[in-house]
Amino acid sequence: MRELLAALNTGHEGGAGTLHANGPEEVPARIEALGSLAGMPREAVHAQLRGALDVVVHVVRDRRGRRVERLGLPRAGPDGLVEVRTALVDDGVLLRRGPAIAQLAGLVPPGTLPADLVAGAPP
Image (cartoon, rainbow, N blue to C red; front, top):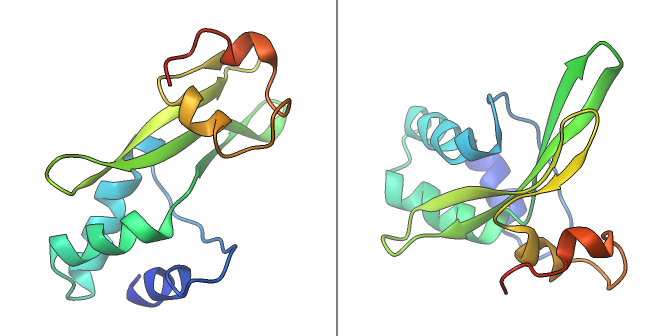
């Protein structure tokens, strides 16, 4: 875990890793636990997370195979701890927006996301 976080914080654009978690919102706690096993203090893990993560992609396997179910975006709380909020949810039928949709819209080129998902989203 220490090596992955270090690699994602080199200042170069792009990078990826895989992690098993039940959803995007559980990723910080999962990384915190793995960082602890690597001897990293909680504050150090979250300091690294703040610079390492742009988007969390949650993949599920269902009757159609593997698919992206949710996109989550990290943000630091007042205590400096990272939390991941849902931006988009694909339940297999509908694409729905989550509380971080405006944050996601700010990361992608205009017109990338369907206008009805972004319209009226708080900045």
